Length: 397
Image (tube, rainbow, N blue to C red; front, side, top):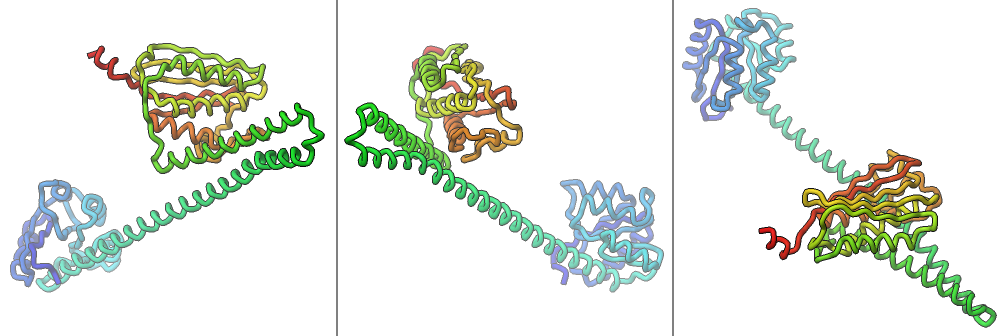
């Protein structure tokens, strides 16, 4: 049954006589109430349908012979601008093939003018509106189901990725924990079984291996905990006054100590960084990892440069090496936990360093990018906002 509310009908008919005839039929119909809007051209109809201030139409009566459009070609423009409004086609031709094609192209019904009476017109309008409403309801249900399928697909993909990450994590932890633990166990067994026959230098060497393995375990645990904190938004930035130039110089000196004699580590500073605030812990995580990678993946040695520049309230750090570089297909996953470039060979690593770097950069309100070419080298670009202390702010006011 039609709703009791007003039914707005858009009639597109170039003949005034036909329009008046249809209007008279509707006046004498059993429709509770209807409002017939008549236009003579397709362009006028499209204007009404696209006008935000115009009526919302419940059904369209379309004559197939118009001054600016002929035949079934009138249907598509109406569906384009008013896809939810049902269309009833009016024609002088009693042609079953034409009627069928009209329905195929999107019309809801087909009426031959000379056969139209009150009953056929009202029935056609009612059925057209109800069929269209049913189709729209079905379309909405299908859209909702499609959306739910997409959501579930995304969840399944995430679950698969999480499972893969978990497997990689377990594999990595098993491998990287086993090595230092094996070193500690073998070293303690050696001390237990051969303590009396070992020299002081040999014992000192064994103790040093145990200490180094223990430090590796602690570092690995710290990295895992740091990534976990970042993933649950517990990695905080707590800026305090820091002499950035002295801090960077200290980083360079520490990197040079870790590097081989074939490496040269250099610092270049440009700009004013006095009275700026930094989270020293986050900075140390960022640049100690970047320096460690630059050294590790430059096995032939060469220059490693840290260039720091102040520009428009942003500190820009370039860390440049001339090592093995990173293949293009690895760059997209470079900052994912446990991912390592395909060309690292037997160079050891956990795949956590750059994941930690990215999370620390983001916690500091910055961003990181990388440029690399295999066999040429890699440049990491870190941009961090310059935060000034209160004393500096007061002086500038």
